[in-house]
Image 1 (cartoon, rainbow, N blue to C red):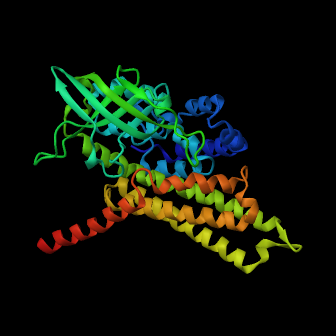
Image 2 (cartoon, rainbow, N blue to C red; image 1 turned 30 degrees about the vertical axis):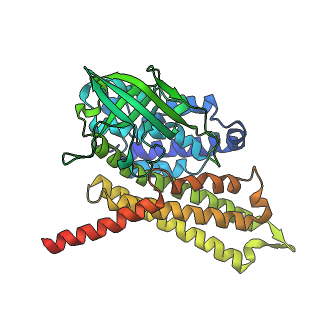
Image 3 (cartoon, rainbow, N blue to C red; image 1 turned 120 degrees about the vertical axis):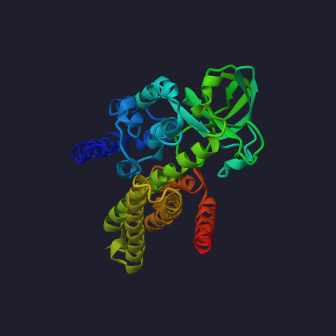
Length: 388
């Protein structure tokens, strides 16, 4: 159930104010210190942002995806590390539990995840197994009543601060019964879990990622999500598909900020005494930015609606992520161009945006993977139609 429209309008207004008046004035501080300040984290917890997409019955706000994307477009307006702080709780990690967890697993974990008491990480990506989890090498073997997990994960968002790793592992080779991939709930303090040093990245300062190693990590049978060995691959695919619409919305928010910064600069910066916004070639760049933002926003809203109605939960999410993340890259590039040399200087918002948004074309499925999903999906659907 979605939140009532009036209540959601109030939530959206509060988030917008939080982003514009609390977070944006401290973007330089977040960049310089590579961390979200504790008082901002605490305020996000109080606002319920760690659980906005978790159902109300488990302590969350209970936004559906059409509402989630509106929130994401506001969150994308500032440093993307803010959203990253609570993104895995609401998204790829939390949704695995919401959709596939047993009642006992939901009771144990969802309320602390929704409150922000527990930070959940989605431990899927490995060296050699990124956008396509079928190449997974982390293994889980049954030993008596326990599962023993061994393997390596990389680029795991929030790993340095996580309390729970939603961990994907292979229990058997893929066979006629399924891909053989299960998902386990592994507390971060379990013996044998080791989190590597924080990654040094191109952008998104304040959003921490790291590698994780699992060495003879022993968890009870109750840690197997859904109580089934064959839940993992489907859980990953559904969580990632939903997450792709969210990331697309985030891209629209960042593109809107880049556009607004560009318009403000073009209207005030002068060349030879003339505001550069009066030059037609600059106006053309602004026009291309605006067109991308408007098209992206319309696409995101349409794809979110199709997710909620279950009209399309496969192709539409990939189309939204592909278009919007490619679009924001172009909009950010134009923003730097409009700013000229100023746009290349650290501390100028469009310089940070340019670096931050580059990751959006890579995580939760690269642009290339989205194209494969879309192209193969169209062909498969046509073949089925012709056979039918």
